[in-house]
Length: 325
Image 1 (cartoon, rainbow, N blue to C red):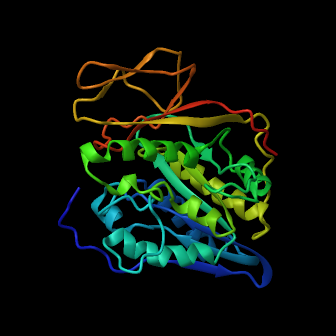
Image 2: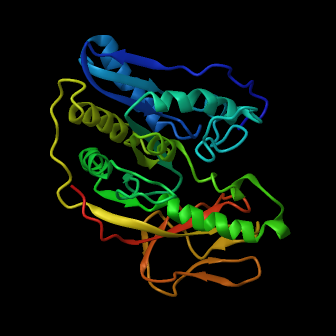
């Protein structure tokens, strides 16, 4: 990390306009600066387009290889804060990510579909995160669950996860309860759980987060590249073969998030994302020796040994009953 790196003052965007009408797809990489698989995958696809091996014949495809240039230049997750939280236009930007958001939000609004490519810290296999089922609720109303699920099933990974925003809202509520003791923070804002995909859905589109694998996994860019090509094929934006959908996906639902509350909080053992746990099994140990145990049989998701105090430490998931496709 290098906090002295000058903040880049531009956001590079690559766009291809097919000559026939069609959907509008936007593909993002490096929303978190140390997650480079998406950037590499996008660069590979752009190289194929430049070489004439791939042509966008319908619709519009927009590529943003590095969505947070400052975080990427520093080789770290965030520039001044997490770009993938509290994403919305800001009349008076307070930080670098606010200024990026003021460019990124209109870009998302100009498209129908978002594919956001990420990676994760610990070991584990690639997976897809989708939004809610169709609903008219206040938290995340949505009307494109079928199209979003179909895209998820064609991207490659067999594991599909939902439930993000409702679980995050519960975490925010608990942070508000601690606010008097810990001080008001940005992550106590009810909008803090809104990132790229949530913003896209709030503007009438649909969106997929693809976690391509562990940050340093040399196969992670392959996962991202395949997903981009399959999205182009499924949406009819390029003349590409469409692979069959995942036949037996593992569908999981996030049900709870646990924050790290003290620098002395530690995990009971070295967890990998989606490791199975039994009800009552210790997951973490607080600085005072109290045990954070699994509330039921399920999976540990996104365990983060480097979590900042007051931020997400790990998520808990259980098998979902949702039928896809």
